[in-house]
Image (cartoon, rainbow, N blue to C red):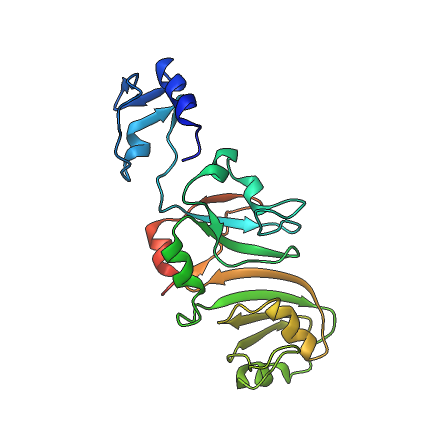
Length: 229
């Protein structure tokens, strides 16, 4: 769970830094079963132990952060506790938002969940709010929903998408695929340019209104189920 090496944890236990069910764990050879209720029973340095594997996080991704473990600059993982980078299994983003896209981003160490959400067979809808450089012409919705649009560099048409105009230069777009820079390329295909892009929803899960940019929290089981609703 990333707290340290075996030797470091042993030293922590010997000085009373590990408490289980109100009792110091000073027997460093003791094996403790990792159960879902462990954060309610165990303290590390006076704070509840981190959640066990099966973690799902909701992040309001700000602009300028990259969904990567290795690239230079600000990463989405920078907002998490440093030790979480050492967790095994590792925490990864469920899909990606590019550096200049903000909004709802999920992270998890549950590989099965990750693949269920991003699998093309699941058709999990992704809803984006786009601010455009030029006014909508009125023909975009029919083209995006036709299932006939082939993006430059692709050889397969896009699945039908739903466009909801908000103003002349702002629209909500629902897609069920996750192609590279898909939303930006769709508007480029109709002669427009996306100036700002924000993801509002993933499946039936909306970005919580009280979650500020750069902030995150654990998803509830109901919220995880809502993704597939």
